[in-house]
Image (cartoon, rainbow, N blue to C red; front, side, top):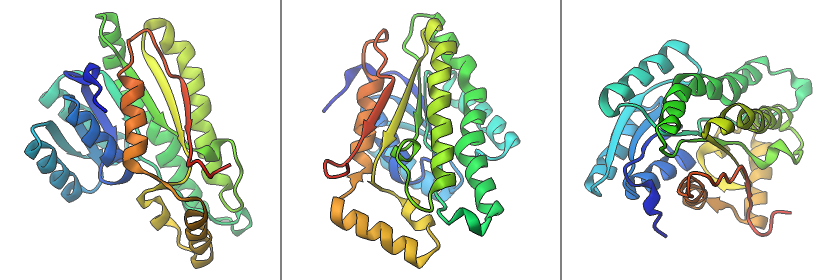
Length: 253
């Protein structure tokens, strides 16, 4: 499906080297948006930019780490230099490191908090002025945060991951009060089981096996299917905010 209202937009997508972020970047670029791709793996970004350009789209690779203040600031400057101000931000970068809380994995907790929560805030801090300026000029401005069904439904051994996603969902809700009256839309998208690289972050063979069983029994969404939801939400008329979208495989209760 084509969403013509995305043509001419300027977007930033984090976690764009794979999974949902990569799929969102491809979809937005195909609809005519200029897309800045942010992630740590420069080689993956370069390959994606080549693919987008080969299809007639506009894209920019920006190697960046959302857990690092200076890296995000430099990425913002690079995006502005190449594309100018942005009007669509997709906060997608995230990590999923399940383990029982009793194991006390502070390293994993910190990594998830730095990426899934503070990383989201760093990107918001970097680009909120752009979104507000676009809205003030009468243009469509969107902030999209990719959360998870884990923000609402508990899964054994995923307590800290779920807590980080619950924080993103709550943050999105609160930001609507700050940004909505100034015509910046905030959309929070909560996918269920989705085929991405997050599963590869699971170090425990037992937990990885449980995840494989879930995918086998339920079937996962593809990253492209989630990307289509992002494109649909951000292509609505500017006075329409699809504020909260939970997208699940049909078999996932």
